[in-house]
Length: 158
Picture 1 (cartoon, rainbow, N blue to C red):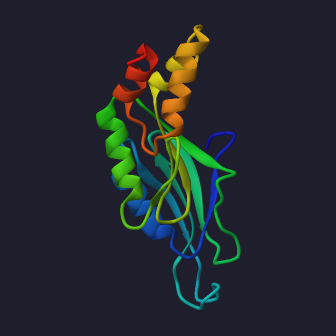
Picture 2 (spheres, rainbow, N blue to C red):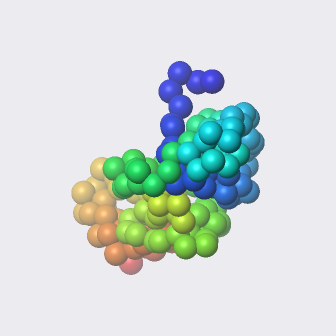
């Protein structure tokens, strides 16, 4: 296990969440599962914790119950090279009840926040010409899912 591993508290649906996430991300795998015995929180045998990998990043999920919810205070950034990749992750992570937000942010059906960010965004926002960078920022602020071509047009002043 890595020195720092995100630990995610789920409302008794960690198994569903892991199946959802590992179907989306390449290089994903369930690494370890620990189960409650009959003395678990609801008296049924189910997963207590699971360690899993998504795109090379390890996570631990807990079936902790309804006590705590995810907030936008923590999110995971998915770096994308192409619009096709942005579209893929956006579609998959909002499937089944996820909700789009603004400026590359979304919440999946479990309430976990993600940012689907094309690599080009930071380059365009960081342009040394403040007018170009501002046009990109203004265009991005009007977007939910990022559109790379629209950002490039804003950068070019078109």
